[in-house]
Image (cartoon, rainbow, N blue to C red; front, side, top):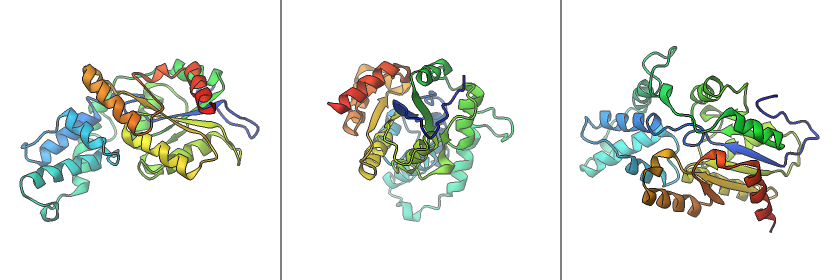
Amino acid sequence: MPHSPIMSKNFSAKAIAIFDIDGVIRDVGNSYRRALADTVEYFTNSAYRPTSLEIDQLKSEGIWNNDWEASQELIYRYFASQGQPREQLQLNYDSIVAFFQSRYRGSNPDNWTGYICDEPLLLQKSYLEQLTQADIAWGFFSGATRASATYVLEKRLGLQSPVLIAMEDAPGKPDPTGLFATVNKLENELEATSTVIYVGDTVADMYTVGKARELKPHRTWIGVGILPPHVQETTARSEAYTQKLLTAGAAVVLSNVEQLTSDKIQELLLQQKQ
């Protein structure tokens, strides 16, 4: 069985499910987010290390999907709180990226030994195969680098050349260009109207669905929110995060991506028709 559905010109999927990767396919609480905190701490000379909640608060603004840019922004905000305007700082973005990557991937670009090696997976390959059996096409649109995304999808999950639009392929979210590109790779019909479900864990992901709906209203777009593991440590935090995703446009919020079964997808499609 192919690990990613191949569309023919006459193929019409019941729906198309497109997945974000970080916080949905893999738990990045102790990898990307840890590297982000390390980076901010390093460039503030160990004066400030953002908490998990502070990182969530930044990302809830909906425009900080890129963790390199988020690191830089938190560094700027720290120094601003100390009376140093960002205009007076001489932060080198490339240096921020290089330090972040040294923590996330490791110091050897050819043999990764960093935090990425220990990321828990949040779904099994069999889940995706079940979607294929139910005539639900699927692919991935992520703000992760292609190398990082490919590492988890192919090396860790064992998928064979899955449909993927990564950081290098499209503008950052909430711009929906990458979402459109993923859909186009999954179906070849010029006037295709399959419902698209985008599955993500951030406000930016839900904003992306909203912008897609504005630009291509002939098609039905559904945002499905996933609670990343780090926010499920307390009920209060889970509820607050759920509300943020719903407010940003999620049709439903689930605690794990595998809860989005083919039956659940069918239920969402029927709700859209009512």
